[in-house]
Length: 215
Image (cartoon, rainbow, N blue to C red):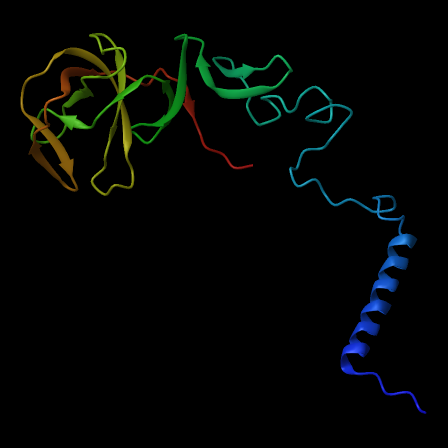
């Protein structure tokens, strides 16, 4: 008797067997499943491995200078340093003032490294919203004292070019309170739980000027 033609099921199983056998021979020809003879792709982390852990030197990874941080004649890089040689930049220290500083945009448009101090909410003591008043939560850690420096971010009328003032805290303030609302300066009140202080705006021209650059 002539053999019966294969059914579609038997034909598909036969094709699958041929594919499995072909794949097995291909794997065997390439080294039996290990990574020998395989060209690795680029390291997705972007870090070039070396003889040790974390970098080409085997000393724990990139330094602050490797990450684009460098000290100048007055501003020095402030960083955490691990016992394993790792480094994590935190910012700058102004060696003239002895305080950490951060780049802030001022009212004249310049960028300077101002002291990294506390900040106050943007309120004023006059109906033109010119004379700043320092406003703090009463529960602020380390209560504010006269003579302390604080920064205040002043909202611009269009909201696109806010700038920073450096202020020195003075005596307590108990007068009227105003805030900017778009192009207007409006009278406002705050609930209990806030402390108010007179402030003096400090000259910032002596702090290191910075510029933004793209490499």
